[in-house]
Length: 233
Image (cartoon, rainbow, N blue to C red; front, side):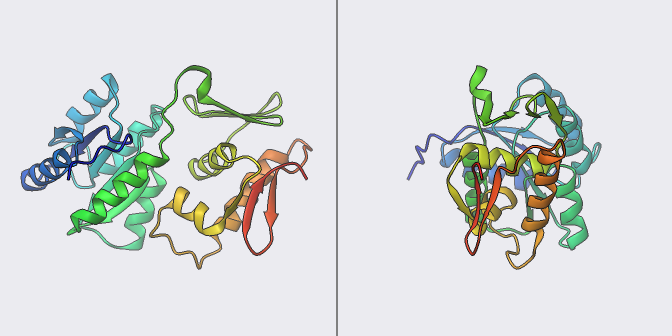
């Protein structure tokens, strides 16, 4: 059945394996996605500079500019396009390196097509496609600009890492709502994240310190036994 979800858009596939490019292209077109194909990082970067797709499926091992460097350059240019990285490497360090340079999710080859499609849909749902002033999210004296990736607390600029920014963006999209730990982990890290770790609490701590380092009041509140909420104390 053809997918008519409003989240469907253009997906760039960057992979030097023609069999993978062609099979993914066929599957995505059946699902009603527009598809752009690239066999090397250089040509993909030039095309993305001119017009960014809605999502990118990026192979780690490319013949010219490798996938890590492609991802790094895209993020350095301020482009927030969701990136799903593909690789034959399944070591934890390789996954961490891909996520650290800006990938949103990571899938090890060989992969199941239904899982890839599910992850792609999740990335597109999480993507904020906005224009004009709608790029700007505000709560109390916190302002976040999704297009420039700038954050201010009053007049003070707040420098955030990628994860910290995405956490704050999620809270600003759901002010005063209680978000469970599982919801936050799913929407920021991906559904395959190990919920048994304390990474969420650590990053919440980082974000709070940066938002409060000018002596401002706390806005990210702990809801014990449940999760967190963006609201005044």
